[in-house]
Length: 217
Image (cartoon, rainbow, N blue to C red; front, side, top):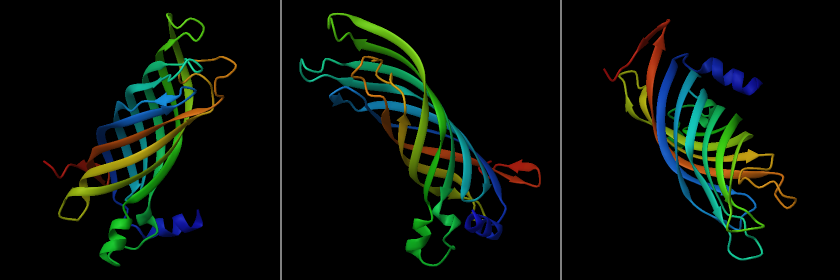
């Protein structure tokens, strides 16, 4: 924390608010044998108190799915989910001075983050006793996300501040509860997770002395 604070004091105090969104591939790891790649979408709002730190609120919506491969494991499900997640993200640029060389200038854009969220699921799954029956389950579970990504400016203003950012990310969303696939039997895993690989854009509004200005206008 001392190191972060020392680096933060050296940063230019240009604050930004960004609005963004994108899409990607989700994959759930639960008690099913076969994990399927599915599509999910997100939108987010982020506040940058400093150029390399942001706090963002993200909304996700998509499908998680898994299937059985044999009669020993009959679990199969489709989960139409919505999630709300708050993250704190810290970029490597907080610790690497700019303009050292072209390689380090690119490394500065990598970031890591974590936070907390909730996932609301509407699940259709196969009854493991009678596979001719489809059960319908609704639940809300807690998420702990661990996020890695790369963000870079694709449009900048005359002050070399990014106003349109591209964002590539990978998130592991850990759930320390049963129920992501809708199964609560004795063999259901006590914890599960789903991965989310996404690409998106963030459009920035720069705040100066209490006023905002969009440099795309």
